[in-house]
Length: 176
Ligand SMILES: CC(C)(COP(=O)(O)OP(=O)(O)OC[C@H]1O[C@@H](n2cnc3c(N)ncnc32)[C@H](O)[C@@H]1OP(=O)(O)O)[C@@H](O)C(=O)NCCC(=O)NCCS
Image 1 (cartoon, rainbow, N blue to C red):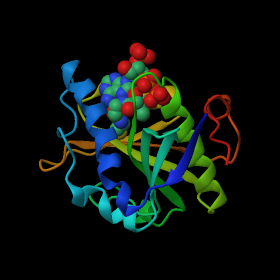
Image 2: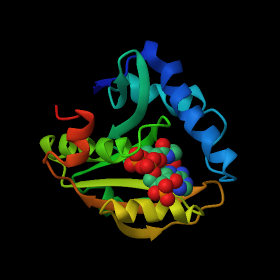
Image 3: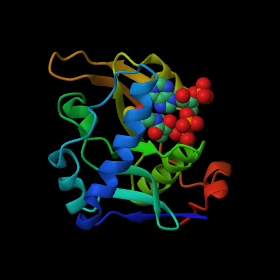
């Protein structure tokens, strides 16, 4: 059974390994999303702030996510940033764990709701329409796509943050 725990600074490489493995699978499919390996600076501040989580299956790290109260100022307007919203990023799963990402998103929604968040938001890779379709299938609404020359993501999505236990969460034991 899997369980989700807050990532510690000592988990940095493990967190980056999960992301790198997911990226390698995407690149092997010809999907040019994400760098081969994220820089430490893209993850460590969120680990240190207590916003980063790892899903474990025994000793194996099988998924990652960051759940932050801080939205990206490049993408969200000041009015939107003032909303009670939580922001998901760096979500990735290991192969052989189909549906775990959905469970992690549901878990994030529950956490956000319990912390007073009304919305769960994310920004996705702008040119990856299959990924964007995935978020629509997960009940997200496409807010808009922001085009900035120095950013590859910018397809903005949100859905209500709900504190409910879903089938995906039960399947992976992510109920607390
Ligand atoms: C996104 C993710 C967490 C979803 O996990 P999940 O809910 O368990 O869903 P699955 O892994 O079974 O994927 C569901 C579908 O989305 C597709 N998909 C997932 N990520 C995708 C991506 N980055 N680009 C294109 N398609 C993607 C899968 O190919 C699959 O398609 P299929 O149903 O036709 O087989 C997981 O697929 C993943 O780690 N993807 C790579 C990393 C990533 O893109 N993260 C999101 C960044 S915003």
